[in-house]
Length: 357
Image 1 (spheres, helix red, strand yellow):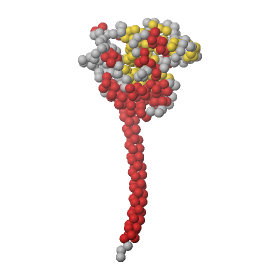
Image 2 (cartoon, one colour; image 1 turned 180 degrees about the vertical axis):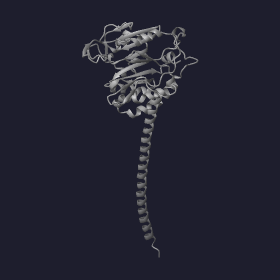
Image 3 (cartoon, helix red, strand yellow; image 1 turned 90 degrees about the vertical axis):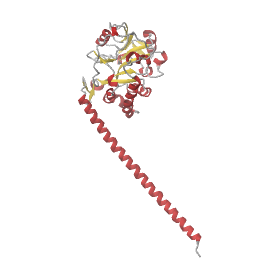
Image 4 (cartoon, helix red, strand yellow; image 1 turned 90 degrees about the horizontal axis):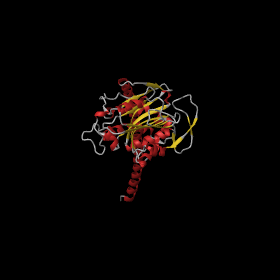
């Protein structure tokens, strides 16, 4: 008689052994598969970096920079990106009066498309510095400039106002309306300001400088530095490398914009290290101090030191998420002591209608 119990027990034992062998074999295949995938991704990543470097070197050859500054490491920094498109002779007197309440029926540029294209480029580049403020600022001129060369961004008619020591950038208005320029930390070299005045007849100017008491390029000028309070602070004149520290008078930053400037729209804001302790990272982002005050800013030229990495990081990361300002024309001075960038507001309707439509 057949012992079915014995057969069942043997079959059960064999089945358990088979299952154990199958699990072992499956785990081996599983880990081998993971290793192969990791190796494949690593090889592709390295080849992508090589292609990117080759592409950037090719772009440097095709689009030579106007001025190249040497850094301490010997690596070259781009002073400007590709040349701006040819400019039509600008005649402010022939422009129509501004109507910033409605969009132009025939806009010159599509601001939303510009923002989408630009941040598709910028977000991928800046992703590598997501947890590295120092790395972001140090590599800023090497990397983000490529987004200037995107199709729509490259068509923005940026004009360079070069005073021989530094460059300021601006998009000129497409209609007639009072334009406000505010400079925080103005210098004695005012060629850039004078050149803008020649083009814009309705230009209102405000300036500050803690080291000089008078500047004829500005309609309203104050010998102060911006700060979080009205107490004196110790500063070094960034325009004079031989200067010693000085105690300078200050004005509360919120009071300066609310009372001294007192306008709801700043067309051009120029910020230099001589501005003082201006907390630009708290003012320029969405829901920041400017927005709480009801102040909009259309264009910014900002110059910061290499010690401002944390502040710069706090400004740029939200801007990438908000898609409000695109940042163009990055450059650095010799030794990488100062980094400059131009920012253009592509989200505010009034700014877009005045400068891009």
